[in-house]
Length: 251
Ligand code: ADP
Ligand code: MG
Image 1 (cartoon, rainbow, N blue to C red):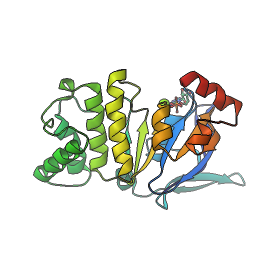
Image 2 (tube, rainbow, N blue to C red):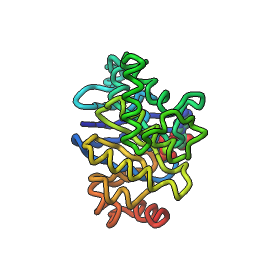
Image 3 (tube, rainbow, N blue to C red):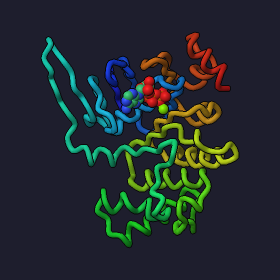
């Protein structure tokens, strides 16, 4: 479903992704862990066209997302076509929700349906209410973000991403900005979403969630995948010292 091949990305002179490769199958839940600055967000942002990689391939459901490379000193470039449509097929949930504060929860969810999918306002609103009900926010569609807790706002963001019916859903530390007592509700919604069979890539430090829900774990450090495998192996019995060190700090 997602295939990333030798992905490289630099900002100025700093190489942030140093040849990242992995694959996952439809319905997989892949959790990505690693220290701050290791390139996790940049990896997700490349998959969602928010960053352009320097080289390497990214495919989603067999379709090219981004590819650009040099051979014999010559730039050979193939770029994804139809970026707007591809963006709709890859949803993203951010650490800081990124809701529009002047719009209600339902308006936030409906916006993409109207703008990106061309659905009529009334129908989009009904779809938004349905999507909100799925994340436990039935009847909260008229609330503005400031009237909702952080956990509820994040669930609106998840409803917004889900309503677009993406093939892949990316989560970038979705619970890191929440008060501890609100984390559980958001993780429960993510667990439900995973059970629905959508492919998910989740950057998270919630180890219990990773062990319970994910079927693949990736440990990244310094722009590279250090270790990848079943969560029970990578997160419980890591083979590499860097993984051991990191895990001893987070759990
Ligand atoms: P992580 O999500 O694992 O904490 P990031 O992907 O956010 O890591 O960042 C990896 C590195 O890339 C960091 O050193 C960060 O400062 C740098 N970086 C990320 N985005 C940019 C940017 N837009 N411009 C310059 N440097 C960036
Ligand atoms: Mg990050």
